[in-house]
Amino acid sequence: MLRIENLHATVADKPILNGLTLTVPTGEIHAIMGPNGAGKSTLAYVLGGRPGYEVTQGSVTFDGRDLFAMEPHERAAAGMFLGFQYPVEIPGVSYLQFLRESLNSQRRSRGKKELSGAEFIRLAKDKAKLLGMDAEMLKRPVNVGFSGGEKKRAEMVQMGIMDPRLAILDETDSGLDIDALKAVGAGINSIMRDPQKSVLLITHYQRLLDYVTPDAVHVLSRGKIVRSGGPELAHELEREGYAEAAA
Image (cartoon, rainbow, N blue to C red):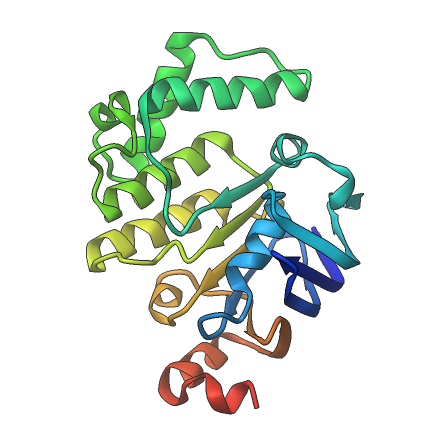
């Protein structure tokens, strides 16, 4: 699904990623953990195509295609979803309007028929119910006035509606209480636990992995993967910290 080879990237001419290599097979959930400043969010932004992040070396393929030959909207249309650590607010645009336009834009690019208003409302209500979110909240402006937990729950609803093949979730557990954490974990499992889908789950802490059991855990330090293992590695990091693993 996702193959990263010797990836180097800079931000404002400062090297952040320094030879990162990683493969996420189809049907698997991989977690990336690491200390602050290791390059975790930079990796997510590079994969998503955020401006200001310059790739200086290496390659990335997504579903067999050269990722860097695709514009950000083409990556999304091909089935990539990027979840943000801090979802942005968009005043004046209702979540329903935003989600319907986003979904239909992707459907058009894939040669599929657009959903009617009634069809989309049914889909949105189904996904909101699945994730324990009041569908009335989707009538509000995007993330405006939402708590941290509500923003992340809404992002899971967005992921469910978009139904991506690859989800890259950047510290989606940041700032969540226990109930919100459980809801996010349930969302990832219900939407993305599928033999045709994959997840790259970026996190500081092991706690989200209590609800989403990864197939592999990788330690990112100084811009590259320095250690990989199974779910037990996350527990070791929780006990001992990153210093030993990144040595």
